[in-house]
Amino acid sequence: MASDDEVEIRTLAFDHVWRWYEHHIGRAYQVLNFLLIGLAILATAYVGSLSVKSYWGAAAICACAIPLTMIGYWQGMDVRRRAELAEDALKELQDDLAVKLRLDSLRLVDRYYARSASRLAADRRSRAAAVVMVVLEVIGAAYALIAQ
Image (spheres, rainbow, N blue to C red):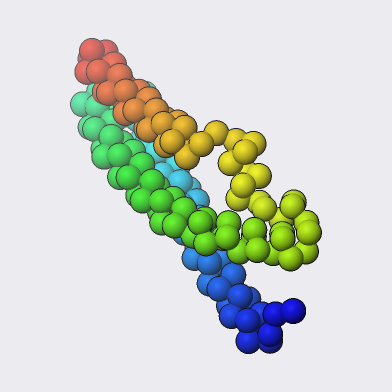
């Protein structure tokens, strides 16, 4: 049986790891929300510029969307990697708890990666989405310049 000090230290460790993970995942969602709102505003401005036949303005708006997309991607990946730092410690704590309680379903990190794609695949999907966005922004700028 674990001593009260050991239980308290494990509780503190779990709380620390979880707060780290939760904080950084929350920041990743904030970055994604900022990116989506920024792109929605720029898309509205783009359509407005095209409707008043301000083609150079529409192209400039697309040019502004490219760095916004890239910064959003880089920040999102950085924050996600920071959150992943907690996964190994969280996995160990979950394993320890699962063994002590004889409850394998507590191994949530293992279960997640067993059922979903790897981290590398997630990175590839994120990168592909960013590349598609940049290509669409370049196409939008080219369309605006050709349409004049």
